[in-house]
Image (cartoon, rainbow, N blue to C red; front, side, top):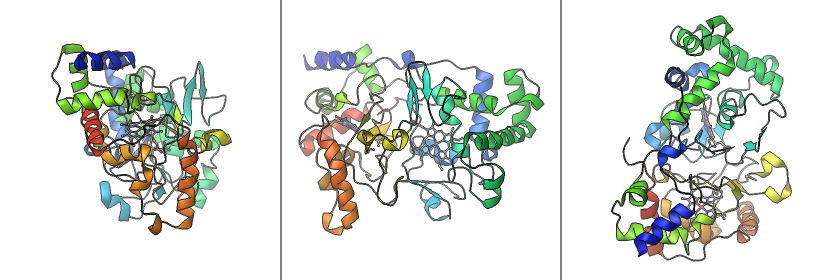
Length: 382
Ligand code: HEC
Ligand code: HEC
């Protein structure tokens, strides 16, 4: 009975087989995209590649609370002490990005497909209708992420406006076209002469790689729902909580375990923040609408056991505690050790969170069962 119920509620909440979310890509483009993903050519002066922050051993993130950008060296914790610039957000993983219907990118949703229209910092001239391709245009021109704002670079290329971004990316396209390995492969994959390659082809190939490499794959949950696969008592109890009294699916519903909408959960803010030390106003940064203060895109949950630390600020290390943050954030902090300002920030974020359909107190046992269920969303094998 309970097994049948879990199957039914999973399907009713939008769970589908991995293969249904796949958008096929052209192999030649994907292959050169993989080289671009690993290449420091993408960084005008910073010597950093997409791979430096989106690594396989950390589930396509960097394993750190906040990212370390241009100038940082090494892997994982080594990056923290190597002189790089801090990017005050937790790196997002890639699972399912570029799959069917995955239309909202970044913690604050600053790239989003609204019907037919792309909403992004490119205004009414987005470089593509595909949100992943638009998003993949951003890192190379994001100051501190992949480029350092030296006076010279600022003067010549960056200036943080769209024209500056185009100039910088035209320069990157020239460098990729001139690379002995990437240039000819990219030209062949798009059937154009190397001298006619633009940044458009560079990013299209990069997106083809991300879309395919990080596509959703079959999970234990898929086997359970569609092939009568076995599950443990804890997984079953966790699943019933997820879709039932735990209210998780109110936000983490749909095929990616996210409504791709924006909600407030009062995670503690660890140190740095997008809006100054200890403050990140989330979605508000993209819309400047006061109603959006402290809202973040609901994180999809595939492979979530592999992408610690958690939340937009990376303030929570254990998956159990990431669940606790939804209904008992004060358990995760020591108010006496916080600055008055950090406490004020937490109070501010508890307001919007109190209006969300968050679960009420769950026992440690229930949190453990939820974690067992979330582990069923790990890819079965890679
Ligand atoms: C310095 C570390 C760093 C580098 C290098 C980096 N990223 Fe990221 N990436 C991040 C962080 C941090 C976020 C989350 C930022 C946010 O949402 O505000 C992110 C988010 C993303 C997202 C959004 C994912 C989602 O769930 O919406 C995409 C797509 C992405 N990065 C692609 C790339 C590509 C492509 C490259 C190389 C051109 C790259 N990144 C290089 C740190 C990095
Ligand atoms: C009101 C909507 C909502 C509900 C209900 C909800 N969540 Fe979340 N969840 C979020 C948002 C938004 C975040 C990210 C908040 C942030 O980073 O500040 C999040 C973060 C998480 C994270 C961390 C993911 C990561 O990659 O950092 C996990 C795990 C999680 N939720 C699991 C759950 C579980 C399990 C439940 C049910 C007990 C649940 N959530 C209920 C909206 C919700």
